[in-house]
Length: 97
Ligand SMILES: [Zn+2]
Image (cartoon, rainbow, N blue to C red; front, side, top):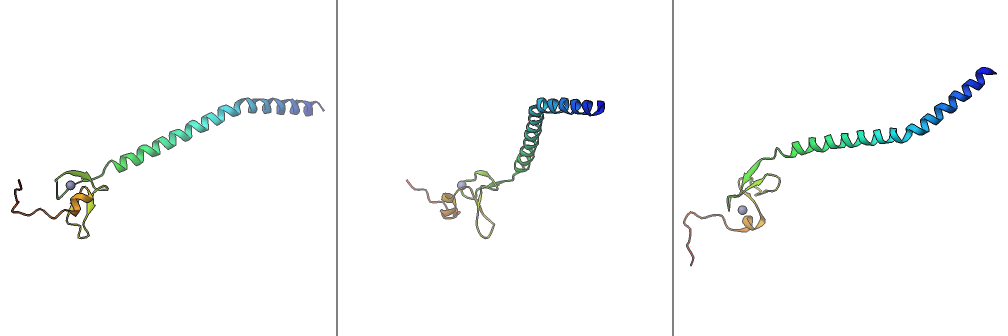
């Protein structure tokens, strides 16, 4: 009978401790999750920051490869649709005005 009372008291105390500690456990879990997500973000950032730069055939502006527009042939790269739509640079430039 003595042991049963001790077991009950110990169980009660453990339950009390658990209730007291639970918010901290949650907090710790949240912090670790945020740290994990933060490291994930930095990993993806470093991966995307290794983007190659390509030069626009038209205006010679350097743009990231994922933002550049490419012709189907893949030979020419452009920074914008405007540059892409314009006629290719001719060797003999006409000086207007
Ligand atoms: Zn351009």
